[in-house]
Structures are given as C-alpha cells and as structure tokens.
Image (cartoon, rainbow, N blue to C red; front, side):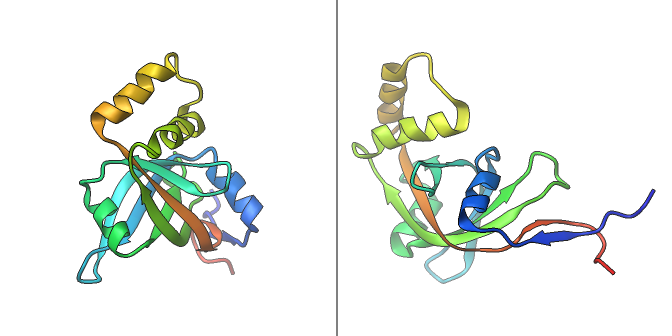
Length: 151
C-alpha cells in the first residue's frame, strides 16, 4: 500500500464555504483575558451571509472571551479523523436573546434541516438562555489532509 501524501489546497472564499457547509464538527479557539488560548469542541454551520455560526450559552468561557476579544479561530474537521480540515480565523461576535432566537432557528436549519415544531424550538432556546456566536472569515489556511510530505 502506497503511503498517503499530505495535501494543502488553497481555496477561495466560496470554495471554503462549500467545504465547511456539510461539516459540523469544529474546534473553536478564543483568547482568555491573559491572552492565552481557550479551545472548545463545538458544532457549527455556515449562515446565508457566509459566517460560521455556533450555538452556546452566554455563561461559557468562549462567549466571555469573544465579548472581550472579538476574534476567534475555528478548525473545521471532517467526520473521518484523517479527512480534510481547514483553519478559519476571523472577527467574532456573540448575539444574545431575544435577537438570537431567529438566528438560532437559522443555525438549526444549517446543521440539521427542518424542525418538527419551530414554536417549541424557539421556546426551548429562550428557556435554555442560548446565544449565538458568529465568526466572519477573514483569513484561512489551505484545506489540508495529513500524511507524508510530498516529494
């Protein structure tokens, strides 16, 4: 069996978003108050404006970190551990309730499709006190795979 050769494909913004859309496993990295990194595994998607969207809670460290330092990095992973991935850096923001309700509906749609009862979903988001993180891509690395260096 031939060894797997690593790849690193530069992509345009539209190609990046197409790569991300079917992938929902992500690692979000934010900055703590002392400047050190804080990483969290999250589920995410891409909204209609091309921003990475992540549902969370206002009390989480990632939310507090973004409020203080409005930038983040997201590593988008494939379901297969050895599959392609990409790192996206960008401006980040936290949107709270009540403004977040319809944005959380959009988030659900890009992650899982249609909900059987949208009124129930909206109530659940309010009852749970959810918020939404949005990351606007400003810089991204190549879509890459691991393996041996090319010769």
